[in-house]
Length: 204
Image (cartoon, rainbow, N blue to C red; front, side):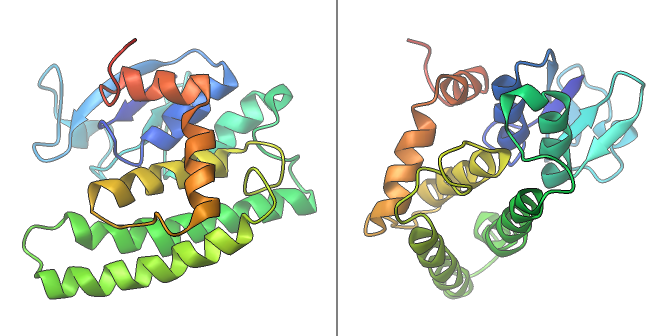
């Protein structure tokens, strides 16, 4: 498999999932502004959406959209318990979390990365995000991960959103459960490996 990524982008979520799953993959860096690969090739010819992540499958097909990609990765490594079994109530709970993260967090962060928008507009989205993060802080009370004791692909995705909170100056220090969750996920060896491979963490 081939993961098309940009350092620190939402593609970090499937990158973490691939490492946690122990699946072999190649990493292909994308310049999102220029829509070019490192070798100069046109990324739009690979993925007409022009976004990351995209996962090139061994059969030549391309899969896009992070929440779908991470579930496929989890299903390919069922023994790692990164997602509950298909058809189970727990699997629908996982999908509920993935949809919440992509729709309520990810999309509300997008305006914060737009230099053309005013500080006032960005403040509106930051307030909206704080409300979502407060909800998550409550949901994490008394448990290690979103699904309880077991790390899942939804946790990797939420972790990326928490890294984005750091990048955009969103102060979540008052949300103790979320702060502890972030530290817990960041301490995982495979998460450290993903951050290092993307140049977001210096190798020890």
